[in-house]
Amino acid sequence: MKKFLILLAKTQPGFINLIRIAVFIVMAWIGGLKALPYEAEGIVPFVANSPLMSFFYTKEAPEYKIYQNKEGALVPENIVWHKANGTYLFSYGLGVVIVLIGILTLLGIWFAKIGVLGGLLTFGMALVTLSFLISTPEVYVAPLGGPHVGFPFLSGAGRLVIKDVIMMAAGLIVASEAAKRTLS
Image (cartoon, rainbow, N blue to C red; front, side, top):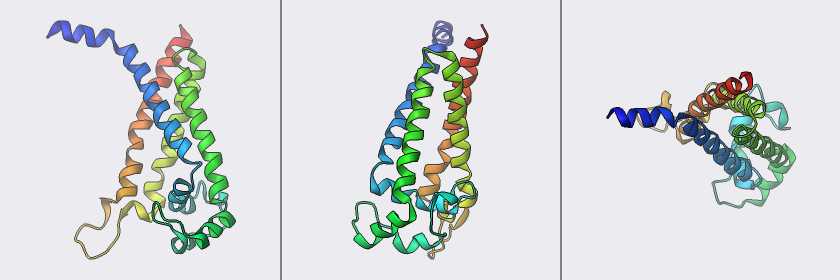
């Protein structure tokens, strides 16, 4: 058992790089999906209700509820509304930012100062995402007749958001490790 613990302790730097790679994979994948209409439309409730981000859209919340498409559905009238709202343009920009944060985090493997920035941006992005737990009604189970509604009962959207607690911690871990390398 002691040999296993020693091996585990010695491989911690590699595991921190694994965190960087994992953050990059998630950021590249999710950021890349922001270029697709279904993903752009899917983030509308979060952005429209956010005091930090709602100014990116031209329409007021909760008007978006009328124009929501189910994943995979193609409703031309809704697409017109989303174009007028700035849904797609905002999503494209957000996707670029998310991919760039992922790249900066990954580059921390080789460039410590860039890794500090990537880690701190990952942390900051996770904080913004977690703020949706306060601002977005859709993150909690809606009152549709079941006994478990509202806080603390997370909907699918809420379960998606709460995972950013892990991204927040990962951002701080990789930033602090990169800061340590920068100082030495």
